[in-house]
Length: 441
Image (cartoon, rainbow, N blue to C red):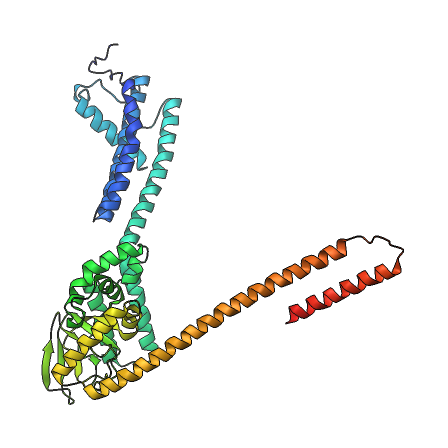
């Protein structure tokens, strides 16, 4: 086969079209890259531009092939090679690509067709161009919408809060504080709810992400140091991020301790009762309130806050509630005893634990726990006996129904014998009455 080309006649390369069968690999590459890249929106735009260029290129090749079939320079619509300027391969491709671009973008401004086949080709090209243009507009609009979906959702929440504050006639000062709080969330990319983001992940991956993000923070707490890894993993999943504005009180003196806090970012001041005297400063990595959620008996402060803690600027704190802690400790009884003992040692060192009172309360708690265990055991036994009785009752009732059914279906030996018929009727009535009584009981 002769595959040589002259200046004006294109090569016969039909046998190379089988390479298009590998086009699906390119689509697989695009899907895989879009999933793995850190810039999905930029990649989608680049992919859309690539598709457009490929379609324009193919259409340019078709235009050149149609011009070759009709005859170069035979009329004003087909490609003209008679002039030396347009005879080079570079000019051929550039002109055909230009013609294809104007046609598919529905701009037109090209010489009108002359032959019937030229009209058909142009009409089909215009229809394809309209579809391509609509696809481009739809894809670009969708990408822009997706790029701003987070910002739109955040703005929607912020507008809702503004309307609520205006409806309730909240002071301008408080409204400005709320707006600044929202601005801080957006600037620090904390407007997303972590639970919503990770809700689609399996528990295993969710735990690994939480460990990677929060484990080092939790290990800074003295009480939780050297705890078994399983307990720490469960506690890490319970940590909640809270953001406080400048001047917000995290806790006040005398409040019942229901949470412990770990400072992630920002500064906190421990202030006196007057709110002016600064007693201490808490910065990143500091922990407070961890002993109040352990429910240690005999604490002189009664598990209440001993100081006022106020945020200096915007502060990010991880919070662990007492309820979440004890829900986790219920599965780790040995760790529970160790944490309470460790907390007692810290309180004794600080002089905040009444050891006599602690022993009395521990004894009372032990007695109460023993009584509760006995009640739980008795309740479990009652449940077992009730289940056994109910099973026996169900089995007996089923047997009675089967016997009654057999008696009703059994034919009489002598239908003319009234005494036998009367006995059968009496037995059936008796069984029905017994079955009714059993059902009511």
